[in-house]
Amino acid sequence: YTSQGEIEGIRQGKWKLLVKRPRRARRNPGNLTKPEILLFDLEHDIGEQSNLAQDHPDIVERLQRRMIMCDEEITQNARQPWFKDEPNS
View 1 (tube, rainbow, N blue to C red):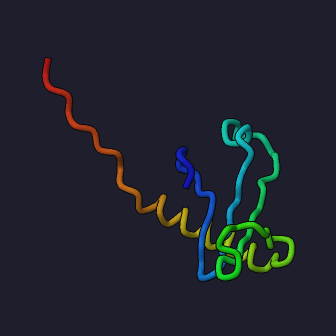
View 2: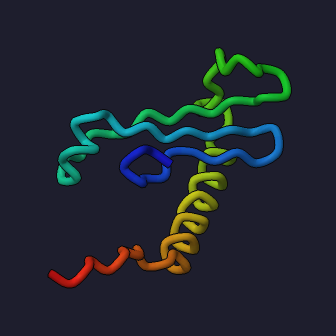
């Protein structure tokens, strides 16, 4: 998750998927700029140097679906924020 609470990546087994939206798109959700899709095989590329997204579109699609499902589940089950009552004036 980003510091703004947006899901940006997932890891499953040896695969790590990052979906990075440009900063402007983060500030302006109406901006339709395409995100950068990064897929790494951490078993063979621990330094995340080779983006394999173009070579494995099926894995990208599967991990993106899983990422959305996880985010929806976390959002649905999130606790409401708790604020300590202010003392009476």
